[in-house]
Image 1 (cartoon, protein in one colour):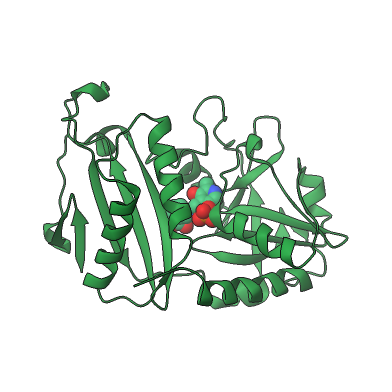
Image 2: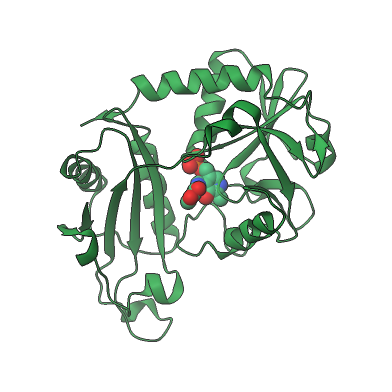
Length: 289
Ligand code: PXG
């Protein structure tokens, strides 16, 4: 495996960064998770745009243009001879001193690209659906640390993930500070009611997921009405169908939430149809390498 760090490729064991890197010391940095399917990088421009937006908000200067980042991603995929891959793109503030002050970082962000094989949820979950719970850890407040920033500080999500794991679940619904549904620890959430799709709006502490956008686009083309709307737990419990979306998970059906059976307790018709259409999109769309 060859890993890209600041323009050079290193073997896995030689790919190292400084212990003074503020990405490590403070979670001061941003990242993206991207997928490639059969030598097509899915929604690459969208991921790069989001990376640059995250960086812009935290005033982190990425020392490459968008085109150069795209080139580096492609180069990393080719170097590793991967047809299908999960790409982790990380930009940290770089090496500084033992203080928060980002001005002390050497003025050069650390850019890392790792391309590896993807490990999906077990196939049975796509067939039979996931059981998830809501957890006590509330999603970061948009007015404190906006979830739109895909920062290296994922402790909010990790705390929720730990609560899910302790309860024997693989994913968890995180609520906002008022108790409305925000999103899951690494996925967005959708519900279906009377053939309409609903998902929380960004202002609820919901990341504008690229898979979420893709699902909304597919639904639009299929004439399925989509609403970005406040969602309560009651509405989730009484939905006809529920599913999660994310780059790693793609579209995964949910059949139980907090012990309540969703719909008929099996992946719903609309969910299965969207899963099929999403698969088709990943096979024909993307940047070829
Ligand atoms: N919400 C959150 C909080 C995320 O981190 C998504 C939604 C889905 O967004 P995309 O753009 O991927 O459709 C994410 C992204 C993992 C993992 O290991 C997942 C993400 C990030 C980091 C790791 O499952 N998901």
